[in-house]
Length: 380
Image 1 (tube, rainbow, N blue to C red):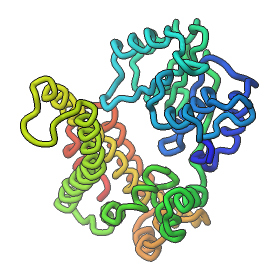
Image 2 (image 1 turned 180 degrees about the vertical axis):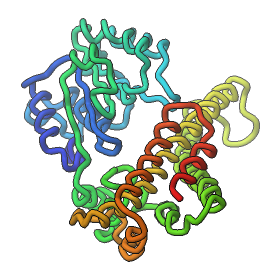
Image 3 (image 1 turned 180 degrees about the horizontal axis):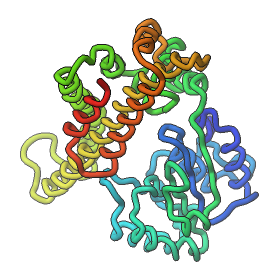
């Protein structure tokens, strides 16, 4: 198993990065772009592992088995920093700290690597802090920025980066990955990959969690019972609850694991009250987890609306007589019946209402319930 195995359906990207890891086309700054679920951060992580791989043979770098590969994939390597935020934006103070870190020589690996997974969450003033560091990098330092599209990063930054463009992999490639890596039954893997619209992380969750599959199906079926304003308000309330349940479900296990790891690191007693110094560190972790939970609810709500959008996407395909495969193929009969009640222009207007709600929720500090209620009334 190599570091590239998780990059299903990205053969061109893998070839580009493998060649760079061997010294052909290697540069000091990279910009990984692609839609959510395309694996842009995974590609950056794999590339970082290949660059610092312990193998002397350049053709074998990215082996996935050496100490460097394993620690980088596990995000514990001393010379590779991963930056992600649970907040709306990365602060200017965090950017300055990154620049300071980038100025240090690598301690054990060939390169000091800074991977910024949320480069699109930096304001212009914050991005400008990084500009000089990226424009005139310290020797043995490589920057890797990740964003949904090149337009999400300032032109002054992206013009100094080598582009790596990822795409959503075909559903069959995602299904094959779930079968190979997670041991999922082929039929369930295929259904999960299609329902997730090729988003690898979502597909894995749907394949593993029957309750997540039920919540998604409930979301997709909402338009079938949408009759009047009262039903729209009830749908909005339920959608927010579904998103909250989904976010809490995915956070609980991670939060518990993080707390257990911290207590073990601190050498906390198995029972009794924690010493004051330990209590403060646990409190800091819990505060960070609460902030993350708030952001994860926003992300979960966006994903819930994406599932809802897939219903209208399928309706539009039926109305246009297109031969493209449906996402919600198990609802074909109901989709065909729903499609016969209106025309494509109505469906497009409904899709536009959902996309506007997604934008408001992810880019402004609006009340989610009010935004979803307004959207729902536009779907009647």
